[in-house]
Image (cartoon, rainbow, N blue to C red; front, side):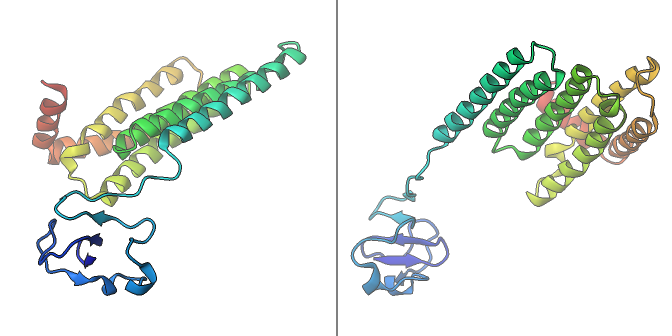
Length: 241
C-alpha cells in the first residue's frame, strides 16, 4: 500500500508514481493519522483508495443516502400538513394562522427540493429560495390579515440581502463576473414590481421599497456602464439572443 500526499489517496500495488498527478508516492507508513501496523492489510474507514491500475478514486458509500434524506423530509412535511389539517377541522376552518402554517410547510418542502436540485449551483439556488421566501411572506400576510409588513419591509429587505449574498457566494466560489452578471439584472426587474403596490396604495411605508429599487438601479447601471459588453455576451450565451 502506498500513499499520494498531493491527492490524499491510498494506492494498492507497487507503483513509482501516482496515476492521478504523476507525483512520487510515499510508503503507507506516511498516511496521516495511521500507522501501517495499526491499519493492517485494509485501508482505514472512509479513506479514498486507488485500486491497482484503476485511475478512478473509489470513495466510500455514504451511510445515509441522499434519497433517504429527501424521503424523511417529505414524510415530516406530509405529517405536519395532516396535523395542521386536523387542527383546522377542529377549529371550524376559522383559523388563518393554521392555514398560514400549512402554507409555510408546503413552501418549506418546495424550498428544500430547490436546494436539493440546485445544490451544485449555489447562486441559482439562493436566488430561487429568496423568491420562495418572498412569496411565503406575502401569502402569510395576506391570509392572516396581519398587515402590510411583507410589502413594506420583508420584500425590500430580501432584495437587498439577495444581492449581497449573490456577490458573497460568487466571491467565495471564485466565480467570474460573466458567470453571474445576469442575476443582478434579473433581480432588478423583479424589484421594480414593488412599484405596483406603491401605485395602488397598498404599501403604507414606501421608504424601504424606494431605497431598494434605487440601490438596484445604481448597481445595474454600474454593470451596464463598466461591464456592458460582458453583460451583452452573457445575455447572448444564456438567452440565445
